[in-house]
Length: 481
Ligand code: GAF
Image 1: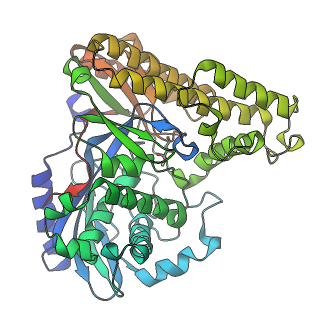
Image 2: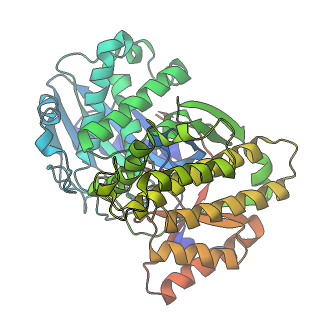
């Protein structure tokens, strides 16, 4: 039934209590606590965080839980909840992570997953056997990055020999384009801060939540991003980690990726009569498989050609369409119509036409983000009008993901088209693409119709049956038990 396809975020205190019980069974002692970090849905600003663009994400109620207790022998013992998928306790030596990170040969340029094979992270309610492998590296990498951060920030110092036992579960679809990776990093990060650092020792239990001010959370987000880039080998740009650690209940985060400053814009007006529905296509993606980095490399080639350090710098503070056109004209002038980018300086042998499309995606996406930011910040705007405008921007964003970023896929295109036909005000693929989720803005009284139509079109066209999550803009990473 449609109900079975709805993914519930669960009740945090119940999940936390369940994890505690299982932790005792697994590790023979109590955990010191349980920490949670949310996934995200991004309204606009895909593939622009690493170019200094603006993103407009919301933290979800769905996320990843970590129960943990410290060890003194420098080992990380990790396991997930589901016995069918869990190959057992994964033991890593923290020292070994340092060695691995120093070794370039392990970086998965060739699209291969990191070496340690482990089951996907899952939970008892939502089993999602995905393509993600080597998940233990996200956790180990997070501890590695915290230790580096602690070298310059004494209150976050990690002592020699620190290790931990961790039991992990998630209410997010894994590899579903809703930032399951960042939720894992950020929940593990809070556990490590609590268990290892002077800040954690001085602020036991839920006191840690208030001790972690926005500035510290920004630093932890940067460390999580570093874990993913340097340890896992995926070119994430910081959007996911930022909203997971710095989101706010009831708000969208307007994130300026030039300097990672955030404003939080209330969504209650818009959400009174409308809902954001995430449709998980169940085509799992993994950022480390090389496709994401390939798109990023195209856009960076255009950036080098145009002589800037990030594409946002091609546009003024309040950009207009004319400035996007001017940047594209400049690109055309510099490439002089050469088809093969190797003939134009700076494009590193890439296809000129492909690099131009990535450039156009990034610049128009930045423009849409600025427009969206103005709409959502305009408290005088009537919610129905705002919703119609937001919907149009979502759909325009999808066209750009499909035609210019070229990261969409048939199920996502079909879903965007179908839900719009049955009453969604707009919809788009979100996240890195090549799989993942579609986000739709839906009048609340059309939600069931949209879910029904989405399920039907997937069945008719032979796609995997999708699942649905209501996006409730939620609180950021925190202590839950
Ligand atoms: C992934 C990355 F991790 C983010 O940094 C961002 O680039 C996103 O894809 C696309 O906007 O989630």
